[in-house]
Image 1 (cartoon, rainbow, N blue to C red):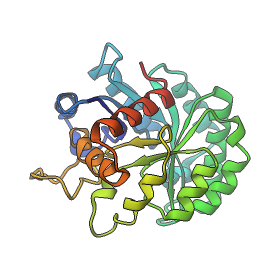
Image 2: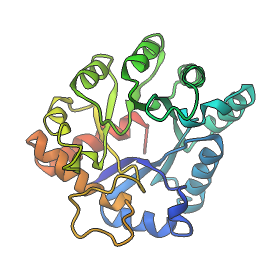
Image 3: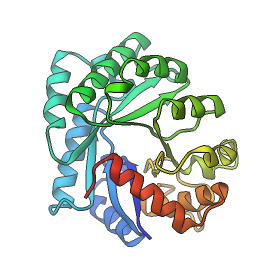
Length: 265
């Protein structure tokens, strides 16, 4: 049984000097491919470097490159040039993490929208899929995507934690959905239990979002409280239960979907 983790923040400081061991544990757990998340231009560069350092053969590690809405205030013409260069690298398989975050508003909303639109335009031009972030902004995200969707090869709303209306609106726009360990959280994730059954095969992917979102149902829990790609089978287990599928079946179709979406070998 193979899994693909479509969202790993392996550049995070909590993984410092331990990245090789984290990747090794993931491979031992059946997570055979991982997409490292780029959240800023600097982090995207680091993610690409990790791919090249830890996986010289190019079979296991890939990356996204983009500017997160938290960093959108730094977006300028130079950002676009730098991002275009990153997106030309073979290991970089998607534009992002980009999107809208109206929950924290670390960047002014007009600047978030400007950076998002620039990145969507790049994705359309370069024929790359998009790795999207959205918090408390589904209606505005949908309105912006509407003008670009026909020109995009694909887009995934990563770490989906929203409600039914948002999910169905995303699916109606033919978007993919990424599910994390949020679904394993008995305090705030139970609303996802009936929703995941509505995501058609071919539209669902799994992700750890490590080091964040350690599945609360995981036993035993790591003493450091840090999530890793090696724990993705726990997300798989929970998703499969609420879809009424075997873990093997859910693993097979989510892995096939991720491999096609990111054009992985």
